Every structure is written in structure tokens, then in C-alpha cells.
Image 1 (cartoon, rainbow, N blue to C red):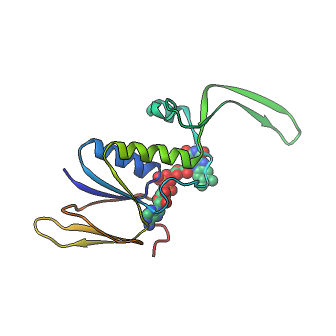
Image 2 (tube, rainbow, N blue to C red):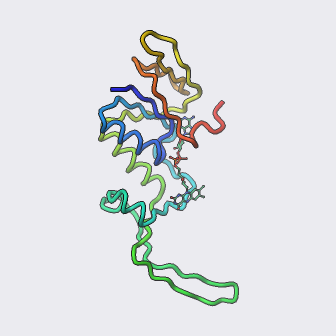
Image 3 (cartoon, helix red, strand yellow):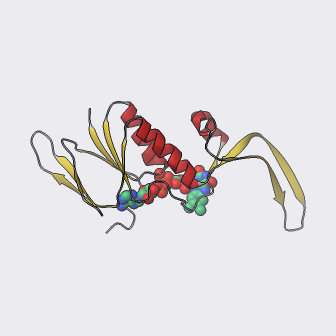
Length: 156
Ligand SMILES: Cc1cc2nc3c(=O)[nH]c(=O)nc-3n(C[C@H](O)[C@H](O)[C@H](O)COP(=O)(O)OP(=O)(O)OC[C@H]3O[C@@H](n4cnc5c(N)ncnc54)[C@H](O)[C@@H]3O)c2cc1C
């Protein structure tokens, strides 16, 4: 079992957290906002729904878009009926859903802005220690750290 820290609890971090926790690892996920209304269309394609049916089969509020109307600059209209709907979520709802699944799988979800990451030399393995805006989060034995690509942008 590895002790893992994930920085960033958007869709990438939350899904990683869920799957790593399900695989039996000790996972700590940090996000400064947790579920929040990030600027985003919130649209999920049919491919995404096929891969992750729980994104449609749940009681969370969402809208299903079945047709699209295209309007040209000359005011010509064309309506396309789609065989499979696009599913639209508020990002706060979607992030909340994914973080709840991560938590239910055993992932420890913490609200903190991670300011820096230190690797502490230890025997038999190095350990990570995260400095959050609220406190220091030392690992017990872990040296595994995942920083989501869009997390940490602009971190000082
Ligand atoms: C205007 C716009 C519209 C979009 N529309 C769509 C769409 O309709 N459909 C679609 O599929 N995609 C859409 N996207 C893309 C989608 O938003 C991203 O692909 C998706 O959010 C990436 O998920 P992520 O988990 O990698 O990153 P993010 O969702 O950005 O999550 C990163 C998380 O890290 C946290 N974080 C950052 N730094 C730190 C730190 N130092 N400490 C702790 N936490 C930290 C943030 O709070 C955030 O929750 C859109 C994007 C934009 C900008």
C-alpha cells in the first residue's frame, strides 16, 4: 500500500483519488476550493458517458441536450437531432459528485491550498511533506505525489 498525495480535486484528481483508494492505497487529496463553480461549459459527451455511466445514472441535477440549432450570419437555421444527448452539469455539482465518490472509496479529501512540497530524506524511503495555507501535512511513509497539471499554476 502506498501513501499518496494528490494536489487538485478537479475531475482528474478526484477520479485518480477514487481509483487509487479503491486499489487499496492511502490517498490524501488536497484542493483549495473543493467543489466550486469553475468557469466551464460542464458538457459531457456521449463517449464520456459510455466510459463512466455513473455520470448519467445518478440523482444529481443535470440537463440533457438532445438537439443543436445552428444559425448562420444570413439567418439560415439548421437543427441537428443527436442520437445521444450531451449531459450538462454545473461544475460545482460535477466536482462535488466526483469528490464524494473519492471520499466514499476511502480517499481523504482536505480543503487546503498547497503552497509547497518538500521531500524529506528518510530511511528506508524519502517522505513527502506538504505545506498548506492552514498547516503542514507530513506523510507517515509516503513518497508518492501527484500534482494535477492545472493545479499549482501560480502557486507561490
Ligand atoms: C471556459 C471553459 C469551458 C469549458 N467547457 C468544457 C466543457 O463543456 N466540457 C468539458 O469536458 N471540458 C470543458 N472545459 C475544460 C475543463 O474545465 C477541464 O478540462 C477540466 O476542468 C480539467 O480538469 P482537471 O481536474 O485537470 O483540472 P481542474 O478542473 O482545473 O482542477 C484543478 C483543481 O486544482 C485545485 N488547485 C489548483 N492549485 C491548487 C493548490 N496549490 N492547492 C490546492 N488545490 C489547488 C483547483 O482548486 C482545482 O479544483 C472548459 C474549460 C474552460 C476554461
